[in-house]
Image 1: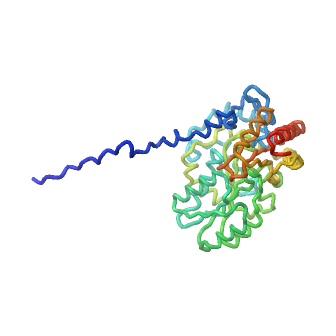
Image 2 (image 1 turned 90 degrees about the vertical axis):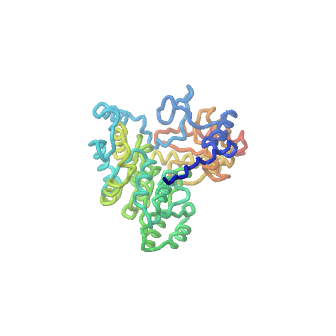
Image 3 (image 1 turned 180 degrees about the vertical axis):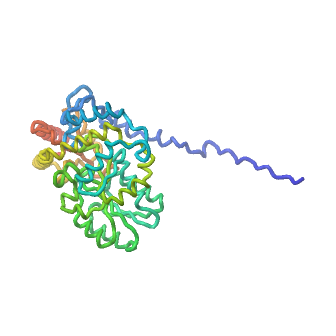
Amino acid sequence: MTSHPVSQPSAVPQMKDTIDLFQKCWDFVRADEVKAAGFYPYFRAIEENEGPVVQIEGRKIIMAGSNNYLGLTAHPQVKEAAVQAVEKYGTGCSGSRYLTGTLDLHNDLEVRLAKFMGKEACLLFSTGYQTAQGIIPTLVQRGEYLITDKDNHACIVAGYMMAKGMFADFVRYKHNDMSDLERVIARLPFHVGKLIVTDGVFSTTGEIVNLPALVAIAKKYNARILVDDAHAVGVIGKGGRGTASHFGLEDQVDLTMGTFSKTFASLGGFVVGDERVINYLKHHSPALIFSASPTPASVAAALAALDILEKEPERIHKLIHNADKMRSGFRQLGFKIIEGQSAVVPVIVGDDMIAFQFWRALFDAGVFVNAFISPGVPPGMQMMRTSYMAAHEDQHLDRILELFAREGRALGIIS
């Protein structure tokens, strides 16, 4: 009888040689240090929300950091639409769009959004973040190329990392630098598939992409275009139709994606484009097929917000008027800002701790803004990211400028 050697268990590693998966969690103390100093600006619970004014910690605070651009989250028509949808359909769909999770509401919103954006078809996703993950790795696969702006939103970064996992290749170009875009795309094989992805309005800075130049480069080098208009729809373009409309290039952009969590006062995402492309995504995108569909209340609220956007375009004019007033006001006070034409107005402070201190001073005085620090922004670009709504009135905006001036002088940011 032939004997077989018995395999011996490998030696148990000594404790000193092991690395605990959770060690990074124990080592992360930056947030605790900022909390201990009293400057922590994140995860502040809003107790009541009236749009331009919210209640936090029992105090009324002017909101100058929300993406509720048209001020519709508290609009009676939007709230009533959500309530009625819950009464009719319940609180959830209990399935994916692919199987049991499609309501007539979903189909209605897709038809309405496609028509509004001037495209053949539309597809809804459960969140705006998920939308990029549903589009990019589904379209860009092995042997194809993804080309992205270095300052694109995190959802696009997640999308191209997933595409990389599918063995697609990706390259990045300098922020809104069309010369660098042409430099990197010229090195790629001409005859293979390529997708250029960019924010329309960049979420941190509020800058608008140089779309005319990007379109010319895409045509020259055999590339398709996906624009993320999360911060553009309802803000720029004819009737709020976004970046392509802003430049008169609606028929030159292949796909436009967006979100319901900003202009549309809800939760979810969408993409519009040619029917054949949308049909392909509908039948191949794991992010769609394996995710629960947007809730009835979310879809109904977005439909109601779209109704208001179409019937009251003056809200867009008021929004941009408000943002322009703040850009001018900050500039006159001596603050360094990033110029733009959108609802986002960043005020540069240039230091992490000063950003935290400035945020706390403004919060205590009655204004909420967003503190952006490194590595979320490059060193020296730490900022108070302010954003505005159509619902802001002059008394809100004047008070924000007054407090920025007072606290900015106290911290030595302006003289």
